Image (cartoon, rainbow, N blue to C red; front, side, top):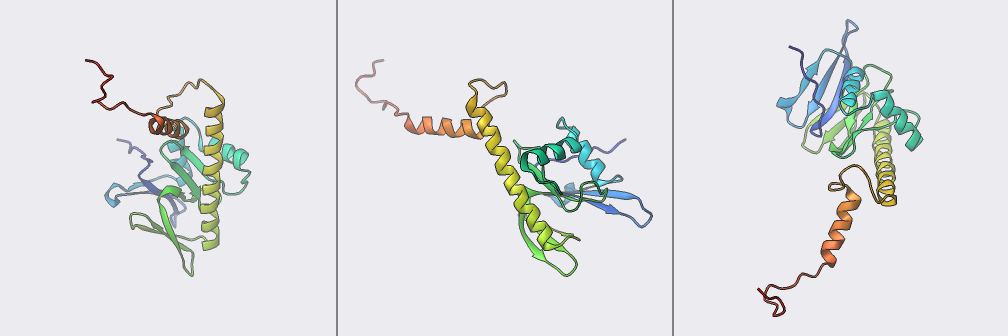
Length: 196
C-alpha cells in the first residue's frame, strides 16, 4: 500500500536529504513528532505532490511567487493561504535535496558554525546547513510575500460586489462583519416599545 503524503497546517518542515548512495529521501516534520513521515523520494517531488493536491504544481507556485513578489532566487510559496501554509526554501528549489520550512511555525533562529538551528514554536528544532543570514533573509522575504498576497486578495475582494467564493472566512469580510457588529445597537429586551 502506498504511503499518503500529508502536508498540512501542522507541518513544520519538509526536509530533503541525499543519502551516500545518491538516493534522496524526505522527512516531513510535523507539530507532533509521532506524526513525522519518512518518504523515499526527493523533497522537490514531495512538495510538488503536496502542491498538486491544492490544484497547482510547485513550479506554478514558484512562478506566481516570482511574478507577485519579484523575488527571483529561492522564492517563498503559499500552498494554501487560507490555512496559512506558507513555505520557504533553504536552498534553490531546483535542488532535489532542498528543504522547505513552514513560515508560521518558526519562533527563532540560532547561528551555528556549520549552519542554522531553527527553533519552532512548539519547541522542536531543526538544523539546516544554510547560513543564518540566508535563513533570516528567507523569513523576511516570506513575511513580505504574505503581506503582498494578502493585500492583493483584499483588493480583489473590495473591488467586486460579487465573488464566487464564500466570504465567510475572508479577513476583509470578517473585519467588516466585526465593525457592523460593533455599530449595531441592540434593543434591550425590557424596552417598553417591544410588544409581545
